[in-house]
Image (cartoon, rainbow, N blue to C red):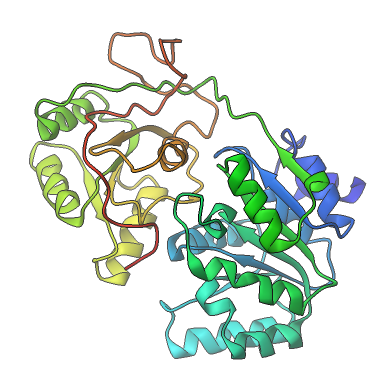
Length: 360
C-alpha cells in the first residue's frame, strides 16, 4: 500500500485515498475477491485502475456501456495509462490492433462488455495475456432483483471460474441488501470482503416540482443556469430530439445523446459535453452511467426513472467536484430542505422510461 500511495499522487494527483478506497484497494492487492458499494463520485474507478499498475497481469473491466468505456479510456490516456476497449463499435482494424496490444502486454487494462467477454475468442486472448484482476463494474446489473438487470452479466461467473487465481472486484453505486447477496452468490464473494460507503452527499440539493408544462419548465430551468453544465434526462429518443431543438431555438446550447443516433455523432456529442465545448446534454438513460465529469452542476429529469436506484445513480452525476449545485433560483443553493440533500434538481416528473441502459 505504500507504493499504492505513491502512485495515487504521482499518477492520479491525489494526496489521500477517499473513504473505503484504501480498504478496497488493499483487499484487491492481497488477491481477495471483493465487493465495493460506493456512491457516484466516491472514486470507484480508482479501486481497479490503481491496482492495475501494481499487478503483473491484465486487469479486465466488464462494463455495460460503450460510452462508459470510452470515457474512462480517454481519461486514462491523459494520465499516461494504456488501456484498450473491445466492443462492437470498433472497426476490424481497431479491434485487431487492440488485441495485438494486449498480447504484447503494452496495455494494462481491457474494457469489455459482458456479451463480448463470454465469446470463445476472447477467452483464448485472455489465456495468452494472463488475468490478474477481473473487475465487474456496475455490478448491480448481475442481479435480477436490481435495476438495469443484464442477463449476460450472470454469465461472468464462467469467466471467473476460468481464472481462479485472479482477484475479482465487483463494484457499484447502488445495491440493496438483496442485490448485494445476489452479487456475492454469483461471483463467490464473501460478506467479510464487502465494503459499503456512506451515501449522503451534503453538497447535493434534491427537488421535485409539480408538472404543468414540462417543456416550458425545462426551458425556464435551463435559462436560469446558462453558464452551468447540466444533464437533462428524457424517457424516449423522440423527447430527446424535440427538447434539444427547442433548447437551441431559445438560445441554450445543447446536444443530444441516445442509442438511435449514428455512432460517430453520438461519440462526438459525448466528448463535446465532457470537454465543456457544450454546456447541456439531453439524453436517454443510454448516457451517463459511470461518466467522470466533475463539474456537472445540475441533473434534470423530464420524466422519472422507473426505480429509486436508477434515480440515485443519475442525480449522482452532479457535483462530483464536491461543490454545491445551484438548487432553485433564489432558494439558497444546496440548503437543507424537507428531503435528502441534492445539487441535482429533478424538475418536472411523471411517466416511465422505455429504454434500458444498454445501447439498442
